[in-house]
Structure formats: C-alpha cells, structure tokens
Length: 400
Image 1 (cartoon, rainbow, N blue to C red):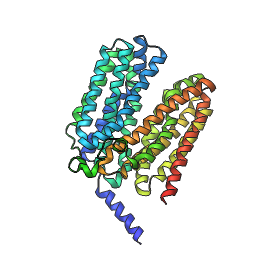
Image 2: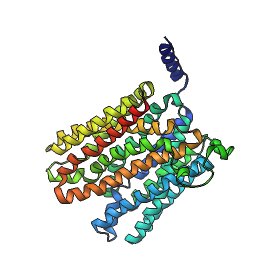
Image 3: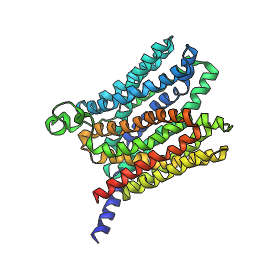
Image 4: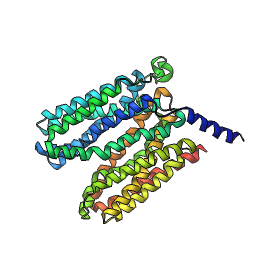
C-alpha cells in the first residue's frame, strides 16, 4: 500500500514540476546553435587542412588535438563552474569558441591551424560542460533523466543537419562562408544565453562545506560520477569505430550514400531519448542502460556483417536506439547523486569518460584496421560494450 502511494506521489510530483520552462527552452535552443556551429566544421576542417598543405596524417591530428584540449578543459571547467558559477564559465567558453572560428579565416599554415584548433577545444570543452550543467540545474530532479534526454536531442538534431550543411556551404561558397556562418550561429547562441537565470552554487556562499578545501583530483573529479563515466567510456569506444571508419568500411564494401547511416542513427536517437528518459525516471537507470547496451552490441555485429546499404541503415537505427537509451540515463545518474554545488564536476567527469572513449577507440581501431581490416573493428568493438555492461551490472548487484 505504501509503495502504491509512493508511486502515486511520484506521478503527481512529475505533473507538478514542468520540464519545458522558459530557461530550459532557451538553454536547449542555445545548445542547438552552439552544436550546429561545432558540427558544421567537423567535415570541413580536414579539407581545409589539405588546402593549406597538410597531409592526411596532419588532417587527423587537426581533429585529434581538438579532442585533447577539450578533454583537458572539461574537469577544469567543472571545478570553475562549481567555484565561480555557471554564467561566466559558459559565456567565456562561447566567446573563445567564437574568436577561434573567426580566426580560421586568416589561418595560412598547418601549424597555425593546429594551435588554433587546440585553443578552440578549450572553448568547446568549457561551453559544452557548462551547458549540460546549466540544464541539469534547471530540470526538476524528479524528471532529470527525461529532461536530459530532451536536452540531448539538440545535439542529435544538430548532428543530423550540420555536417551536410557545412559541406554544402563549402561546395557552393568556399571556406570563408562556412567559417562566417559558423561564427554567426555562435553569436546567436550567445544572445539567446544572456537572459537565462543561472543557478548559483551553494559553494559561493558556503565554500568550506561544498568544495574540497585544496585543489586537486578530488576538486575536479566527482566521485559519484565515476561509475557512469567508466561505463560511457566503454560505450563510446564503439562510437569511435563509427565516426572514424564507417565511411571507409562502406567504401571498401562498395556501398554508396553511407551518410544516410548518420541520418537514420540521429532519427533513432530522437525516438529513444525521450522514451528511455521517462522510463529511467520511473523505474531506474537499469531499464535504459542494460537494454541500450544490448542494442549497441547487436548493431556492432550487424555492421561487421553488412554488405549493402539497407543492412547498414538497420544497424544505424539499432545503434541509435541503444546510444539514445544509455547516454542520457548515465548522464542523469552522474549528476543525480552529486550535491548541487558539485554538478559541474559531475558533468565534467561524465564527459571526460565520454570523450576519452571516442579518442581511445579511434586510436585503437586505427591500429586494428591497419593490421586486420575494417570488418574486424566491429567484431572487436563488441568487447568494450560487453565490458561496460558487466561493470554496470556488477555495480547494481553491489548496491542491492
């Protein structure tokens, strides 16, 4: 009887606490625009690198060095978010991002591009960590997974639109137009972000109770977020195989229009995020994470066997369902047990695992591809997904 009353109270609470508030809508739109500005540059910058004399290896480094600086910045920005507040860190990150995009127009050497790309990663690391933290502040705790699922749809929508838009602008108008459009999108993001009411961490008024007294690993890594960060690390290792080698693998299989894989993937994520977000809030993260990882494993197996576009697209849809289930659930888990004044560190810890998984996966799968071929990548990519599932299941058993 008490359990039934608790469920009824939880349902009533979810009805009373809306997700789609003014600030949440503004933050979601701002996130959409900054991710558009980021994503439209991804396929363009390797081409730009080649145009100023860079080899294929340099083009890969242009992408990799950005990830390195973003990974370095995430825990630092998490510490700054919790110590000094959200607004300043977020807006400074956006401004750094904007200045770097504009500066691409005057970059004439590959070394200058690498340095600029490295600084650009700091801006992205700060802005993206801050935006997720601001969103987690705004969303009611009783609907956190659902709200983070909705918030994550902005990046999914941007991923579905922006890369194609960047290449279309490049083909029609050239590099400068791409950079100026990206900069214009970031300016819109900044303007939308200004009227948001940002949460002030308790640490600003009670620093001794809220933050570690001395800077160190404990100040920038939130221990309650370590488990979801480790699990997402192994899951995004599979994503590294997709973003780095799916096009080359499809070309080897003589499959054209593989770009549709990402469109189908994005559509599946759009479907799965809200559903599994609500399921997580009602029943717990295990009801999203475990089936989500199962879908990821099935998708990797299908990709390894694919020899036609329809099979690739089916795999993309299944992978989107799985990734859309696990990512918001694990992110919600990473912040739900952290103190409000440590949500910045929690988000930074989570995305540290997220980024490192993609980076480590890309490097590892490159070695595998060189020695064993592309198909073997996707067979081996099943292993980290299984490891992530086992770690998560073991944590559940310990908590029971």
